[in-house]
Length: 71
Image (cartoon, rainbow, N blue to C red; front, side):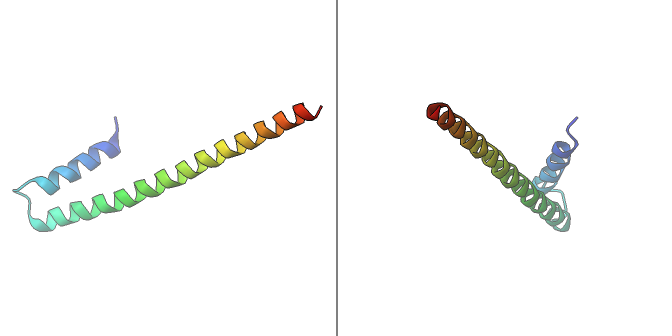
């Protein structure tokens, strides 16, 4: 189902297998590091977007509340 999860699991397995050549382990570890950066960037961007939307909603609600009190 989750292809990326399976891919990451295979890379992690390669890194910890003692029978693998060091070159192959290094390649797998390098790929995991790239994926880590991509995932971190994704999380940061979407967390920022989420909090920006929350702040925007709070501002609208406060403005509406102020308008109701002014009437």
